[in-house]
Amino acid sequence: MGIRLLFIILTLWGIYIIVRRYLARFSESDRRRENNAADNMVQCKVCNTYLPEAEALTKDGDFFCSEAHLIARHDKD
Image 1 (spheres, rainbow, N blue to C red):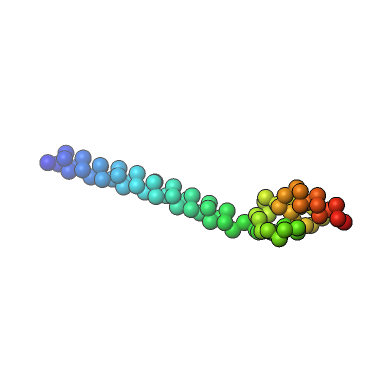
Image 2 (image 1 turned 90 degrees about the horizontal axis):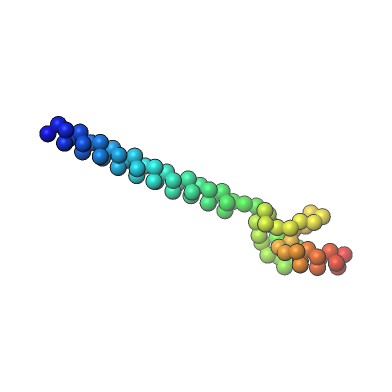
């Protein structure tokens, strides 16, 4: 009887540890996703589309969504 009880307790403890690690992994990925959503958004000078600053092209302090818009804007100047 004592060995069976010990086995049941160890099994439940093992399941608890596995579930806790599994849930911790999801909460960590949620935090990363929230951080990515908070990126600074900038507006393309040509088409006024918003995009993350990390993906934007910059020239003379202006932001552009594509190389074509960057070239088109600076060809006019």
